[in-house]
Picture (spheres, rainbow, N blue to C red):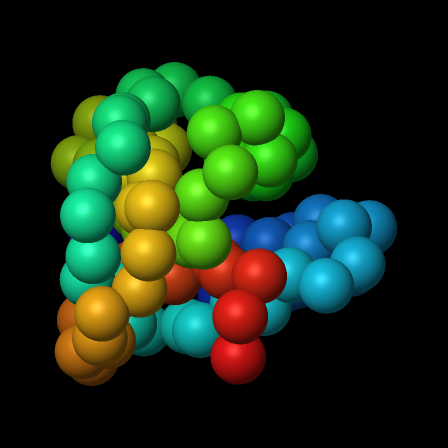
Length: 91
């Protein structure tokens, strides 16, 4: 998928700066989709999520090494999905 252990470490460090966010590695959250962002950063996604009042974002690295982010209004479930991350304000 193009995602490496280094990316895992960087994602963890980035999320530590935004208190209250949880990162569920290798999983995707389900829920009502508010919108999408392509080629953003984890920090820009967190800021946009705050603006949209979303509960979570799904983050994945596309085949062309671009972050694809989906904003969710709510979380109705989670499932295992290697290479994806559910970043949420909820546990």
